[in-house]
Image (cartoon, rainbow, N blue to C red; front, side, top):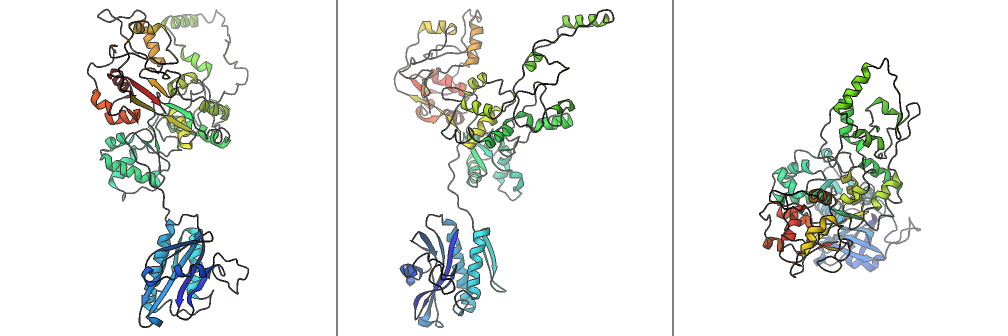
Length: 588
């Protein structure tokens, strides 16, 4: 914000002199404003305001008394002036700690305009009006008011000249865009996008949906990868994008130190989160309710709109309200933003699949319904139709905070979901995690692979034979101290428990054998090596050890390795298990 503007010149009799100042009395004392306190002492800075000829034509700034003075002195030589020269300067006074980068162009443009006006008709040298009067004073006053209030001005000076100035904010340089980053719009780009945009920008924008990584966007848009990064960085510079991580159910997230001061205590943010993650508000459901057919969500929706990620759920289990869907559901409040909890009746009714025998019995009973009285029995958990329906159980603000608080290091999203599946029945998991990342109270715990240079520990023969009947070891890993499954910082390859794989392993190992009469393992734990055969793994290695070794310095996260090598995390883990040496997985 501009504190003051003043116009000074070199007077052949008085020396450096302030001719006009806004507000009056801010730079030098004024009889019209005796109560106005001085911002600075002009005599202390007059040498820099009206400098030597060698310094004229350059941007000059000087700080004094907590204020910063920006000026662009001009020296004009002509025989019509006293001493054959005329030196003047229009200066802006700003707070010293304020960012002044956007005002540099203002003083330079103002100086160039006044230079041209002086050459045309002596606009400044012929101005003999008193302080606080005249066109020059009016120009300074209007300039200060418009820039402070509207950040732009259009001031007509005469029939041929107009002063047009606009303040453009200068943002910090955006971070580098990597192939494994996932951009997400924070604005609706359709509102300001037109055919004059860059061709690369027009091609990549439809594929930015908070799901596709930069590499995938480049492939889908058929654009050069470097140009794609530059276009995304350009949008990032103007605050149109967020950069997220690749979402995966094997990823680990944990609350930050800002958790208690944000969503844990902000009820409005809790409601905002509920509206953002509630699958009942998905556009697909609304379209299905009105037209009877589901429509694919747009991939170009803004970050806080319902279809930003394309993760809408078209299946609603149970009798929960969908706005405008079924008249019978109008008994529930359609404006409620809190997602409902999975109902016991919904899970039970899903398992009630009529069998052929039950259909025969029902048809037989219907033929004798005139002679056999029907008996109605209300089972436990059923709702009595004669009583008003109970209100649905919901995940309110406290429940949302509890779900976020239950995320922790050492626990994957898959494990977290298994523990809270009932509460998460109508919550979009990806949007739930993304909301925490955007608001800054969640962070991603990345995994890094580090080759210690030590030989791989020997494979225990009894370990592979009995691991399907024992729980995974906790505490110290077989690959080194302090790297067990309970440690959130480091673990050996294969230490992480895989509940789904363990269930499959339990079923497969209970007597299932291959054609060769031997049992095949589907999951392994710490210490297993390439001696274990995977049923769904190709014999050929996807990545050779020489290529893989470049990423085993503990500085490359799994997202980067998988993106650059174009493999899945499962394939990467399998390749690390085959690596001829000890490899630690570090979580940080």
